Image (cartoon, rainbow, N blue to C red):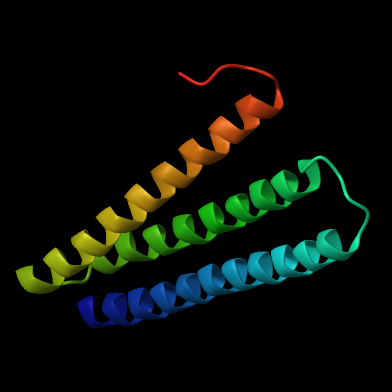
Amino acid sequence: MRDLLVVATEYTVTVIDMLALLVIVVGTLEALLAGIAAMFGRPDDGQRRRDIWLRYGRWLIGGLTFQLAADIIETSITDDWTSIGRIAAIALIRTFLNYFLEKDLGEVRLRQRGGEIA
């Protein structure tokens, strides 16, 4: 039974990692195309660039969230402490990236509404 669980978990982690990759690639391509369009479009006050950045940040947060989910699932089948430590370090890094990216996006949203940053 455990062997079946390990195989199912490995496939699940692979699928979730592929979803994360897809989310990040789609977001990157969208940001690239929007950035090129903004470069060659009419000049603005920078609002369009900020909107592109905010949207791209949301894509990255989504991808990081998927990757973190895969890391959490992967720890359920890991037997040795070295692997658990490696997964924990990766999860910690991804969590910090996600946190600071979300914080930056929140500050940009607040600035757009005309509020003050604490």
